[in-house]
Length: 272
Length: 324
Image (cartoon, rainbow over all chains, first blue to last red; front, top):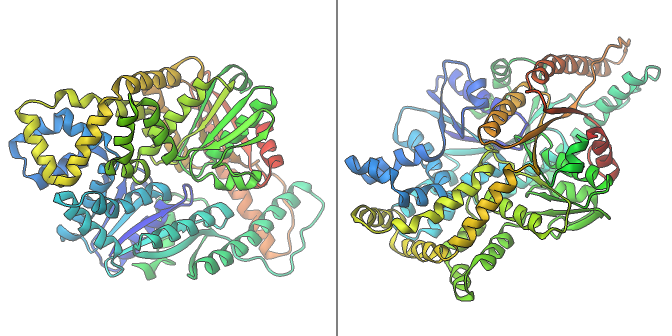
């Protein structure tokens, strides 16, 4: 399976992506983690026995085109040519398209991996990547880019091979952004995986009385209670709006990223 | 911080996603406006929540207070305006606006937000209608792409002079194979039309660079009290320094005070929540103090305590006061 993981910044995407990778490895899968961008959270959260690679920018474009266009000894003068640079560097979208194409290469063509987990970054960034194959398929009506884009778009739409998971935290803005992201993915007709709500607190009991006395204690507890109520309201609303059940993942005590990812692999085992 | 509101003409807020960059941008702008400066804040796309909180439609632009105008980047409109301003004739503008490649570029393609945020920033500064422009930056994983936008435009436009020669012709054929004949023709038309904009646009990107690196500009790094975010922030600070961007302040958003009380709580749910809060506050202090100590001298560091959700102008005012 090819898993894409996205969500609003700061919700713990990389940790969740690492947890899915760990869960898959525990089933005996050969697992690769991919970061779309510079080395970041996923590399930090994965245990050392799971391989991770970064796909970013112009280097990936050069490598991909050299292979696909069979440039051979012309590769260097071409990759240094200003026309090429204008095309690749400045024409927005090319780098994103190639990044998605490289993910497909790793997953489908190399045959080295059973499970590939991609940390696709924030939802805006991820949507830019994920919609690029369909956009390019329409923009470039023939030629190599058209054919490549069509193959990539087909993979991203196939729920048998691909699952795009959207991560949120139990607060209004991240939940709202998750709903918008799922709706955008539906519009693009892409293979939606699950909505995962990270850092959930156990629901508050019906009757809670906050002790008065120390105002600092009262304020901290009131804040916790308000957040617990907002969590339930937010999750209910999200499930209604999307008609989709969410997976809740508990809030963990502060610990190192890999330890967190290992702890979360268990509640996420059904995804692997 | 006060100097930032009162002396500078341009404040650029950068940071990784989810740290509250848009909120801090708006709060900075509010603080400056309340200090008497005519201020505009330009937010980037997912600022709808902020608009809702303030009860305005940011997409249309709105006055929040007599001194504070807030607006949101509209990518399509910004591109069309860009073409209209820089095209040497209506015919060229028309060719570009009707070009299919251009139409995709201006709406769908990744990365073009950065180009246009810069363009809008220049427009606002040139207009002279404001004392201070506060700019939120796109919520990209690579916040630094934003600073590279002028160079990328330059590079796109530097091209067409080198389009002769065997290698260029060979490359042209290869790109045609890659991109498809029809699209390649569209791209050709697009690039040719763009070249007529070169003088204006190059002038413009020089202009943008001068604004971003001049003495009137200040960068504010927005971060949060967690190890992974602080790591990203350190990298971002290094990247800013490398590009000679004038970093003036670091804002650590949503911090928590250290808790020393030891309440006896009977309710197990409440006891667990108190425990969570103590653990979190203690862990936070352990990562924040060394981070703050590692900042280069001369950079202001402000902590903004976690407060109520930004659901009103009042709540934003709390943040603005915390920044002062």
